[in-house]
Image 1: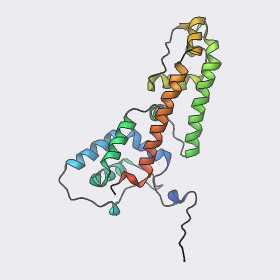
Image 2: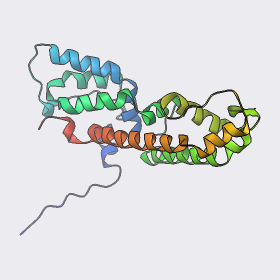
Image 3: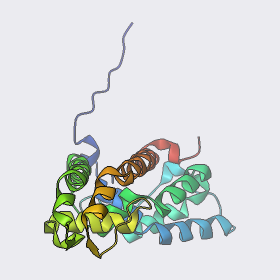
Image 4: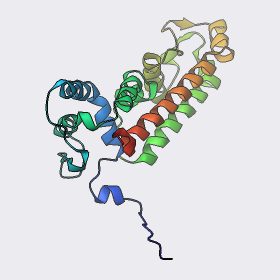
Amino acid sequence: MAKNVLIIGNGFDLYHKLPTRYIDFLFLVKNWSDFFDDYNRSLREKIEDLEYKKFNITLDAYGKLTNDSLRDFAKYSKNFNSDKIQTLNVILSKNAWIQYFIKSGYEKEGWIDFESEIEKVLMIIEHFFTIDIDNCVGKMIFDAVNPITYDIINILINVTDSLTLNPNLYNKTDVEKIKYGNIKRKLIEELKIDLNKLIEALKIYIWKNLLKK
């Protein structure tokens, strides 16, 4: 019995100018509020349903998403899985990793770079709570760390609920409470939960289940 086998190699999606890069997802994230407003406005309008098979989305010369792309997508609102759109809206509204990538100005294109950035953040957190924190005795906490650590910790303070550090001088007792307390554990737990939610958002963005079946 004859069988057909489809082999898709790395870069197949980009060759066909599909907006599957991480930066495409991040572009959607940065402009989600406008897209979500256009999506809801389209749902309210009394227009003839547009079939997703006839999608005609405007991309740039490199196949990347643009503001016009998002406006085009919003026109097909009645074809989207509304539950998935609402799930995306909840995740994108408050997610520590998403906020970190936005606030850090991350713009690398590769998924491997994206994964490496997450690893770098986690390594800096570990180094901060096990080594850097000891250097904070008698100092303001951000005077005791290098600029890269400063930038990352400062962003995490603003995008997480569990990392609460004050800018005042630290004595030995303050440092020991931070080093041996549960701040790091709570921070890692929060980042793990938000990473799983980020993965869910990426699946919705890339997979076909964003559309009605």
